[in-house]
Image (cartoon, rainbow, N blue to C red):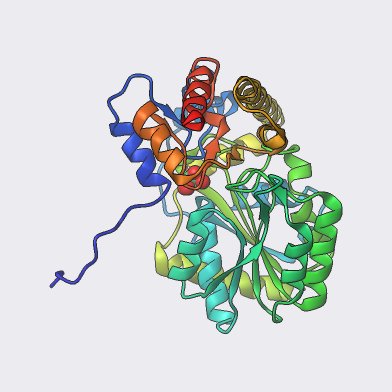
Length: 398
Ligand code: LMR
């Protein structure tokens, strides 16, 4: 019966992370997966999460199914965080929001929805993008293409080429964009560049699908949502996926949201119905626990403030680690290329190391980064940064 089933070659991120766990070496360093670790190399439990969870567990109560679209209080609080409390599209009921299984779940529910209603459209992702973007959209039946994005020569953005490629797309093409902290390169658009991209998408009748998995890890919770809010302010139809895996350190709770900005409230109602139908036919309804934690934090002013401060401190620690690896490598590498460690934002830096060098880092030194050269700088700390610098210097030396 199953003879013809292919072996799964594994996932470029999750399988590498699993291999890291199995590596017996003491001094191994995990900079592969996009997870924030604290300065002791531990996964933090944020204080606001701890407090909210203690209250929730203190009153366990029955555990009914959530509605298919998710926990109402969560959906509302998440919408406010993503679009801003006073967003006019939100007040007018033009945004359909469902609770999803993390950001990946949002992308998949969104992909199923657009495949059903825009069957002839193709998807365009940045070159490069998070590996799973391609897998998700291809599995949903789309042809996935790329638009220019990262400039290896400068460690920055190929903005003119990106804009020209988007401007040449057929109407109703789906353009996947990263709201902030681009994964894997750490290279983001400036506000003026976003304005131009949004102008083109509006003129060309394109459908943006914005992935915001790192809100708060770039320039702050509001600034990171600039593109999303500008799209909503203009009333441009769009899909937005957001996630609380990173900014709440709630990876395993699978907390996310899918938001569809519609032209009017009646369309938003129908869209919400179809998103709900997609949830029902995939997994019926989402889980409760993480959503309750997030909703409580976002709707309790002192918990929200505590969460925001702790998130800001996490970003400051990442910024210190960017400087530490930059300064360490400067002893071994000359030229401008190193400045990308400081310029690039969020959890990732595109190191420019080749696949062979990446393999040697792992095999000879126990330092894990992705084959593409993506390094999760949020996994660096005072103890391991020296190990990583030495390892990279040795690999670069011969
Ligand atoms: C990553 O890019 O490493 C994270 O978003 C984790 C994942 O699911 O790939």
